[in-house]
Structures are given as structure tokens and as C-alpha cells.
Image 1 (cartoon, helix red, strand yellow):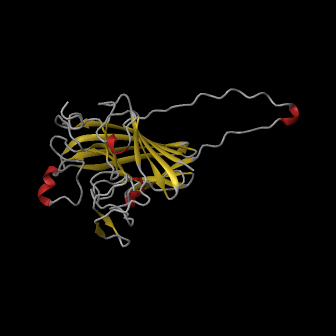
Image 2: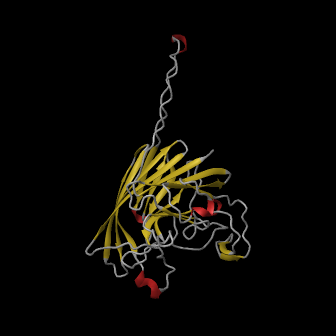
Image 3: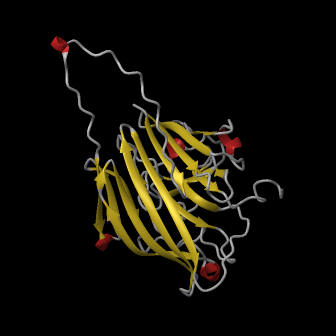
Length: 319
């Protein structure tokens, strides 16, 4: 059974297949009545005490909007396919054996940027050295309005992008729309950023903007020595990588595959692999009205799958 997760960056799009020709009418003796399958109920359940809002499809977990104090931004984590397979890396929040322990700021699905008026929102985490903290930015959750429904649910949130002293640079309004149909799970994100008291610039930079960190099985095979978690969750150097079960591969709308997808442009990109014996495909779609469309793909073999429409020169050798 194949599961597909489609993610629309910043603004969503809906595609419909043409209807099939009408079949001949049955004879009266063979008349049957059919009804369309009911749309699954998508419930959003707020848990203020634990700083999270859970998204359920037919009573089963899909994802959660979380804003714990240990993170420097709100994220969607974990994310599951229609069959319940988790596609996101667990470390550092919920480490699993055999995972990479790099880039602690890569958690679930998020949106931020490396250079906002000189502040780095992308790379911020509790692992940052104290002397570098003044250079970092944090996204602070302010409010959330969840709406449940049949076939889709939505979550409207507000947040502030602040500097190390708490001064607000940007006000954020984001709407998530969660959809489910058959084996497909979809998330649309529409984000509006408004400058607070002063002009805000997003200079050309590599690290941005919509990011997803996937689990080990969806990475691309590699031979480079790395540090991974062992069965007890401890960081352990591994001189030779075991690529057993590592099956990921990128494909873009322009026909680029594998590691070559990094730094190229495309209307969409997908990452396919096998997790727990099940084929999984994740697609990120860039909306045509977005700045910098079609986006550049900051898609790495080690499991970072990101769309960066603002990194123009950095991905094109200064062009």
C-alpha cells in the first residue's frame, strides 16, 4: 500500500481528475444503490498544558502542532502517513536507534530563515553557544484557533519573530489546512509575515525556508562517517555507514533526481522510499504566486527536504 503526503508551501493548490464516462444504465432487475465513501473526520484537539494541538484523522494521529519551550519555533511533529508510518526524524525530541544526531534545529516541518535583518532564525536551538545567542532569532507562539471538519480541518495561528531581547521584528499569521482522502494526507500552509516597527529584509541565504527533516529510511544512501543514536539513545560515532533500509530518492518537476536535486529549481519535488515495508512518497509543491517561483530546492541526501524561494544567488553561483 502506497501512502502519499503532499505539502503545499505558503499557499495551496487543488487538482481534480476528469470524470470517467457514465456507465450504461442497469436493467430494473439489477438495480443497485451505491453511496460515496464518507469523508474522514479530521479533529483538532488542543492540549494547552503540553503546548500542542493534535490533528487526528478518523481518530488516528496524523500530526501535532507543537510549541514546546525547548524549541525556538513552532513545528508540526511528528507527521504520519495514512497507514500510521512516521516520516519525520525523531531526534532530538523522540530519538530512535540508528538516527543521525546532526542539526538539532531540524525538527518536523517548519518555516523560518537564516538571515532576517542579520538574525539567524533557521539555525537557532539550545545547542547554540551562549556567545552566539545575540545573533539568533526565535519564533514565539501567540495564539491558535483549531477547526475540525469532515474531509479537512484547519488551524489558524499567530506568532512573533523576535530577537534575543524579545523585540518583535515580524508578526506571523499562518493557516494550516489538513486534508485526507484514501491513502493521501495533505497539509497546506499559508503564511503572512508583517513587519512590526521597522523595515525587515531577507537577504539571499542558503538556509530557508519551508523545511522538513525525514527519518533515516528516507535519506539517500551515503558512505560518509557520521554520528548516530545507539539503541539507548546515546550519540555514537559510526565510521562506516550501514545503508541497509535506506531507500530515499528525490525527483523534481524538471526531471532531476537524487543528490542532483539540491540547488535546482522546480515547481515541485518529491522524496520517495520504503519505510517499514511500505512505499512512501512525500511531495512539496510551490504555489505559482509565491516570491521566487519556482523555488530552489535545498534538498540534502542526509534527510533535509526544504524549499527556499529566497536563496537565488547562493544556489546559482551568483547569477
